[in-house]
Length: 429
Image (cartoon, rainbow, N blue to C red):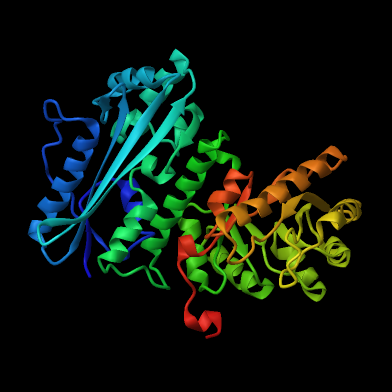
């Protein structure tokens, strides 16, 4: 079924690419003035519905998505600033205070709204200095943003906390929009996404990861996004790099070698860091030492020693910990991590920079959170015992990265959320 986005917002376009593909962008022309006596929630819901209906009347058989986002403080709606001076006034109004972000979504078909949702998120700003307000207002970033700021951008340093959906603050509540489209029969994106879709999805996920870090009171750049292209063709890795991704993760040494050569031939691989996130066999260590910048899966001293023999530059390693003692997963037992870290740190040309774990498959959200919290506590305990180099926590994949970031992840390993599911052939089925 045809899907149309009745909005020109690049942020909404990026988020929608994670839910439906392909889709068309056809902005709806509606009067966005607030009616006299109209409260903010009614206002944003009305605009989202009007945008969806106007575009739906032109293409009645399509699913049309209308959306609107407003920042509300003291019951007043702060829309998009007219200019830098207007942006500065809005930011001064938000300084040191909490405000609410409303994001309404309506899905229409046949000229009528079929589903709708109103997202509410509360954002707290720290007290802002006049100079930083002026500097941010003078940049181009605030001018097309409700409330004159972007949580995933330069204004991330203004935010102390977020209660509610991060994607609601960005402009399109991801989970709720996906649920509405699924109910109405929109097809999910399939494997082998085109480069355009991969670029949109990477930018959306990167923005969300940064915003989730900010929502936890951390700097926007404190969590690195490692894009995993396991089982996908080399051109997918190249598309991620072209979109801006500079951290690529692979499970298999030979597959990484081919992709690294392909990306290099495309002329965009010099500043890319390659991460090995799959199990490393000792007989592949020599090849891996020359291919990867970071290895996440060290759980045996012998493998680390083999890497040390051929490391051409300080190779960063993470020790994989089987926090849940799952016999189906690799990793050293938590109580054995300290000894392994100490032995590997003594090897030449290696730097042990952190710990890695994999959340339990099928675990409840709180169960996964407990796993990640335990790894953070173990890392912190090892640092107190003298292993200060353990700054990284590699945890969180496409299904559980939200909890991982909240529990302190500094590296998240995401594949499906960005490049889509692997084909049946790549899965071996």
